[in-house]
Length: 170
Image (tube, rainbow, N blue to C red; front, top):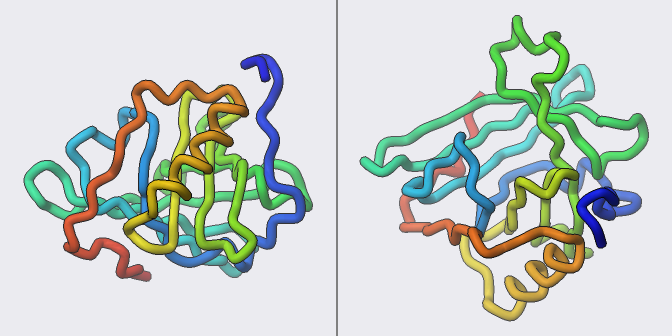
């Protein structure tokens, strides 16, 4: 698959089953998540207006809790596998071109593991409902990423130290 062809996303994704807490298992580098961050989790919940509240939490290199609250919406009505996410303050979320693509590329039938990426293939996350994943499952999902054209030579494995960050707040 070439980088000019958009990656395939999950057909028929059930957003209500996707909601809840996910732990980051691995990611491609990005400026908002320094390499020394550990215990990265994300909690997704449905808002009254139908958008999704995104709460990301992590421990920084000093062990201090870092948190960012964002909002996701469907990029295309009726297709929950292609979301647009923003972490700008609420009053600035109307500004064009401030949303990032969050495409769900693959999901386990029981919604226990997900592979998420951006269509330009610059960003990729391997997520699970538990903070650990067996090597065979990890390799299987990463093989999907490779087949979709993602380069994984810079992949970062996210350490989980047992210090929880996944408790959602309101």
